[in-house]
Length: 225
View 1 (cartoon, rainbow, N blue to C red):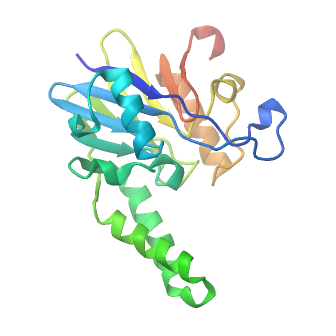
View 2: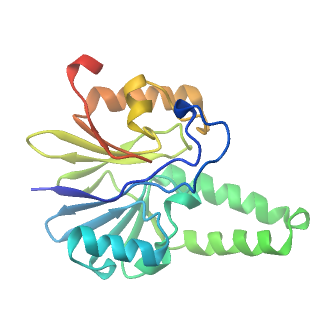
């Protein structure tokens, strides 16, 4: 049976639904561990490595070395701070996300004359990092499926966990917080508002439980549909 556990609950730097107009904290994404058989899939390793290692131990009794796969719901840097500590795992993201982010970085590299040396190093480091990623298949395991949720970024995607008792979606930025989800509002940082609104509707139609991108899990019921 597929299992999931929140490793670290994320937060937004600025939450407009709390009346915040400027950054009030350091953003980090929710990190979730999904287990299916001998696969241990860590979704969005967002905290710095030392903090994530400690939190992983607190929440699982294990170590990051136990992780077999990493899945990034988006390639936004805030969702992948601890990637390099997971070098023994396979790294996955949606193919569209991988290709569009690579194209974005290559465009920046071509305009390197307008970047300072630190920015050039960052772009090259990200291009090198992308070489480790593989396009996620439609099914990562027998009970873990790719769930495209484009809008927050061009290739945003979650994971759908096919538990026989309920449908769980680890949603990433398609549902940033429980307040956004229950209000039917997309995050104000999405790349395509119309696509993001459609993804949010799809999510609510399918899921019984949503793991939000920068919040805890949220239970849905018919009264919110």
